[in-house]
Length: 106
Image (cartoon, rainbow, N blue to C red; front, side, top):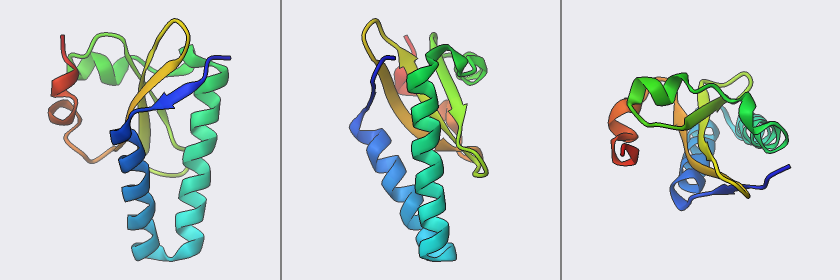
């Protein structure tokens, strides 16, 4: 198991999305989202290669993988490193992913 380390922007993404669900549906929905996001995070820690490279290929970012948050339209975006997972973003499926990830391109 390699630990997943969230970059500061990934942490902001998680908090922003949780706040959005709080305002849209209340505490219960926000808690379900947060718990689902953390569970998805735990999956990639146990099985890093499970994430799809498709999003990275579409965005032109070599090595980027993504993994969905169950029951919510969000995906963790990360790179596999030798000793850890570099979690760069938590993105909503309706966001302009290519534009957001442009700064990660080689």
